[in-house]
Every structure is written in structure tokens, then in C-alpha cells.
Image (cartoon, rainbow, N blue to C red; front, side, top):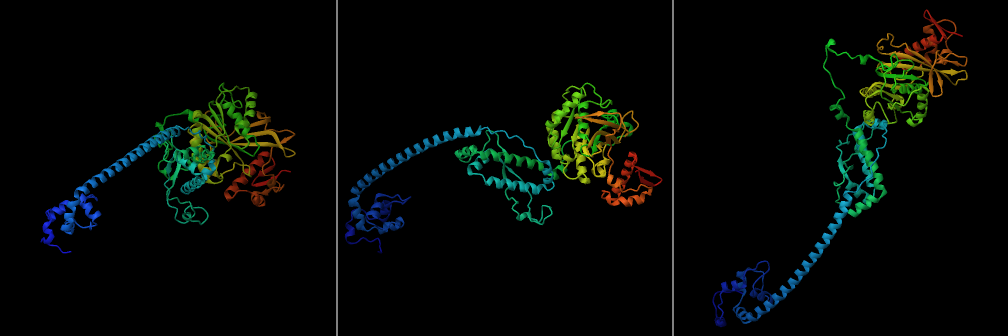
Length: 596
């Protein structure tokens, strides 16, 4: 309806001034849905459109509406006041109800918080059972360290697989009591990155880990992460699987530490690994007579010595007797030889010769030698792999209270080596391990076995680095059983002892009497015994009439065990010397013949 400011007819009779500004003021501004009584009367009672601006609303008011409003204003205001009072009362009641609900909720929260605080305190001081370190197979560690990144990646993946098999409660308990250890591993997306013999692609093998978060490190009391449901955590702690998985986690953590990072180890070697010294003038080098002395003159020099022989040649019994004498504190001699005494560690690594198994025999040997307990002989069954640095470090740490010592005896070299000693790279690793042991002992003695040709088993590199080499030969009865005589011959000593001219001339003959090797006067000759002859099968092929050495060599060439011409030449030379010494062949003027 079009309006103007002209007031005609009955409009002129409206007593309230009909002014649009006054009407707009009466309507009042609309703020947050709240208006004046006139506003609500217009739009709730009279149903005038209320979605326009105040100025337009004012123009929507007719003089009739304006007059009507003034007629009902007083009663409507009273009605509004009553309604407002009703609404205020209702709002007050609602607010009081809300306040009461909030107080009840706050009380409930306080109760829950108090209960949670009690539970948290109990969980924070909860004492986990100590985990006893379990033995590590250092031969396996040795293999894992060949491909360290692949090994750690697979180890982490395996831990995650096992973790996911546990119940929700066990997982919650494990997360609460362990910190996250992040393992930074390179991508394995390149094909055959593991450098093994197959052509697999590690990137698709399931071993690549995008976010290797492993809960491995135990949190100390008071530092536990209790974000998960406490009742769930408590349930997990009571589950036997939690304790079992703790042991798995401890083993994984230890393996990761053992594998380490060989590249970083090479860049930053352990302290004291190699301490270079500047070159010194010859005459400026301080004299140290002790460095030239032998632990047992003519028998055990300082450095690395290997007693070797066939299985059953009594090498172990001999080193046990040696250890008992060296550890004596009353000046005992070894086979009449004055020796250096001190702490001795005998590491018995043979499966059938644990410390508990060899103890009775060693007690008997000591008693029959007339010696008393010295407290300086220590038997050890701690695993040791000489060409695995982590194993050697662990072994040294386990024997810290006994080091340094006079001698470390390892029985045997074969059982403390990962890989074949016929390989130079394996022997080099063993040498490094022995050198590390020599920082804590004057001498290291490692018992070893012979090869088929009757010499020490291993590469020439092994023999070349030895300070001492001792051969053991046991007699054989006529029926083929082992006899009771043992001959011990010093084959090599790199430097003679002070006061001794011959570096390798000592030869000892023993008679086996129970666990004791008693020193005899002869080399074991008797009607019942005959010292064994090496390679009797080859000896039987030689002619009984003089034959040139070259022709004889052709007859037995196929029976030699050496893999290279040089090793076969050495084997043939040693056999000739052995047979000649035993008197079963005669070598003269470039010929050889077998004695019938």
C-alpha cells in the first residue's frame, strides 16, 4: 500500500501523533531477536511482516494500528510483564537445575579424578620383574651384521607383527610402560638391496617400515605414559602375555644394539681401539725385559699360542694342568720349568666340556699335583665368538672383575669362530678378537684341531701370526684304540725366551693317568703302544725300493688334500719329514723308499 505524509479522514482524529520517526522509535531496534513490546505486538498479535528494517516497519503501521496500539498498550504491557516474570522464573529454575547438574558433574569428576589419581599412583610405582639377560647366539649376530640395515628392518617388522597379535589390553600396558624408539632405516625400494643370493625386491617384501615406532625402552617408575584407559592398562599387566612380550622386546632391543651400525663404528671407533704412537728413535725406546720374557719359557710365549692335534690327543687336559699351575700362588713349576704366576681364565666353549663338567677332573689334577686352591683360576662358560667384535666386548665386560690376568685359555678355537678358519677373512677377524683379549692378558692360548695332513687346520695366515705353535700326538694301540702316551712338541716360538737359544726345541712325553698327564721319561715307546703314523694310506702306496721323489709324488698326488699346488707341496714335505723321523721311510739323494 502506497503511503504519503498526508493524513485524511479519520486519521486526523488519531490523538497519538502519527509520526513515522516516533513509530520507528517505539518499535525499537531489533538486536539478537529482542524487541520492544510494540515490536512483539505488531509481529506476534497483528502479524505484520517483521523481516524488514525498522524504517520500513514504521511505514507498515497504519494510523488505525497506531491508534489500536495505544488503546491496548497498558493491558499488553501488563501481560508482557507477567510473561517476562514467568519466563524469568522458568529461566531461573533452568539455571538452578543446570547449576545443580554442573555441581553433581563436578563432584563426579572430582571423584573420578581422585580414583584415577590413586590408580595412576599405583601404576607409576608398579614394579616390573627384572629381566635376566638371555644368552645371545653371536654366530647369528655375526651373520646379521653382514647386512645390518636389512637385519634391523626385518627385526623391527617382526616386532611390529608380534605386537599386533597381542590383545588390546596388553598393547595398552606395553605402550604405557615403554618409550618409543625410532629406528631410522633407509628405503628398501631398490631391487635386491639385501645383497643376498636371490633376486628379491625388499621394497615389496613387507619389510620396509614407513613409521618404525617401536615401544622398546622401558620407562622408569614415575615416567609411565598413562594416557590410555587405566583399567585397560591394569588388565594388560595381569595378562601373562604382557610379561612374555617384555622378554621378546628386551631381546629385540639387545639385538638392535648388538647389530649396531658398522659404518658408524668404522668412522668413530670405540675409545682405545687403536692408539697410534709416533715413531721413536731406536735408542729412545724404553727397555722392557718383561715383553721378552715367556709366561712358560720355551713353551708359552707372550702373545698367541695354539696347541693343536687330533681329537682325543689330550690337548684340553694339558691346558687344564697348565692353568692350575699358572694360577698357583705358592710358586709351582710346570714340568720343572719356572713360570710366571697370576690370574688365569679358562673359557671352556666345547659343548661337552662346560665348567661344571670339567670341574671334578681339574680338582683331581690339582690334588694330584699337591697344590692348594689359589682363588686365581676362573672357569668361564660365557659365549665367545672371537671374530665377532660385539661378542668379544661382551665377554670382556662379563669378566671385568677378573681382568687383567696372566693368561686367557680358550678351548677350543673351532667352537669360538664363526665361519671356516680356512678363509683369510675369518682368520683376520679371529686375530682382531685375540688382539683385543691380549690387551687384558700376557698370553692367549687357543686349543685347535688338525687337518687331514696332520698339521694345524686353517689358512697360512693363521700360522704366520702365531707367537707359539705346539703339536700334540697320542699313541695308538695295536687294535686301533687310543693309547696312553702323549707327545707334546714345540713346533714354533717366534722369539726365544731370555736365556734360551732355541726357540722351538722343547719336547715333552706324557703318560695319561686318569685326568692327569704325568710327565714321563721317554716318548712313549712300549710293547703295547706305537705312536701313530700320519697318513698310513699314502705311506702304503710308496714303493719299498728307492724311487725319485718326483715319481713317488706322482703315485700319491691324488691323495693329497691341499687345495693349491703350494699347499700340496707343503703337505708332501711335512709327510716326508714325519715319516723319516718315525723311521718308516728312508729319504736319500733325492729318492724315497718305504721301510718294510
